[in-house]
Amino acid sequence: MNQSTIPHYVSDLVVPMRTAHEQILAELQQHNLLPPPPPPLPPARAQGMAAARAYPMQGVLKYHGLSDWTQRIAFLPSISLNNAAAHTTTLVEFDPALPADTAIIGGIPAQGRELERVVTVLDAVRSLAGISSRARVISRNVLRTKVAGKGLGTSASAAAALACAAISALFGPELAGHTRFLSTLARLLAGSGCRSTAGGLALWLSYPGISPTESYAVRLDQHNELADVALITVPIDSRIGLKTEQAHHDAPNSIFFRSWMLARGDEVRECISAVRRGDWQTIGQLAELDSMRLHGVTMSGSREQRIIGWEPENITLFRLCNDLRARGVPVYASTDTGPTVVFITHRDHAPTVVAAIHDLGLNLETVVAPIGGPAHVIPVEEALSELEGV
Image (cartoon, rainbow, N blue to C red):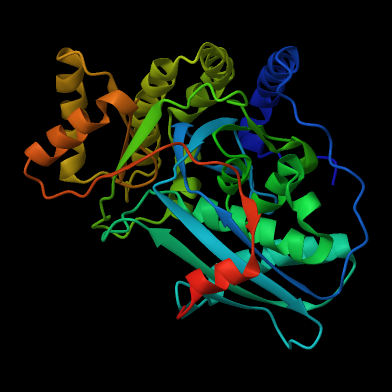
């Protein structure tokens, strides 16, 4: 497929979004950040087993809405930070003797739409390999909190770990380490899985009509520029049972959506420049600002059943950031689809921020972690040990 679907209601925005895309590519090229094209595929096996680990992501420049649902192409490019506060471990085994694809996720057999999304990735890998072998998938999100929370980004890590393990099982670990190639497969389960694959501060290149092979992720902090950043995760459950898929459907209907799209190119390039300076505060500012925009877009996408994804704790936590900054503590709050908050700060300030959160008396958990790396293959024995009992 050379081009993805272009919805008629954004056809007039294709040219400006493509122009912004080309400007982003030029910026990446100027700073030697563009990854090489995928290598030729090595010979594939009909049978094999491999395991992988990947980290959830926290949006900086967020996205909602898909211009092509089959290829999971977003309307606009987006940027996120991988978060080492949690991870997903996934084992994939292809075997010609298996009668059907199966997936056990967190100890529960996947069914319906959940299984369909897993099979979409497996089908893409099988097509590349030219085989028909069915697969057995076992996956688990490993959290460091009692509360899982909504909006932690584990669908992204699940997508990245699945793609990495599946490719390694049939083609070997070297191809599984090519994140540009891998990210186009992870995207098929969850768009944000594209960025989770790349690791660090990652950019997902996307606009309506882009070729699916060109909608991939690029890691921006390739020289350890953000090593001093601490991510403080505060998991909060959604009391309304928020579904990200519904938010994707509603968001393009918002009157704010088009302006959100058109502003994105400049902000992506601002992020690229900030990383090169090691300017994590600009990244934090953009993450907090776009959290507000994302909620505004999502909340205004339907006249009848508006999606209000925040919980009362969110307002208190957002105001805490203002209070801390007024006291000279640089910290920024970020939310994606759902109420879970990730605070972005310098590691030297992390103890102060954690103490301030606990002093609120909201009985909220906190996890301090560095930025997470890319999806990567792990030994099958290590995965089996972690997945034992799942």
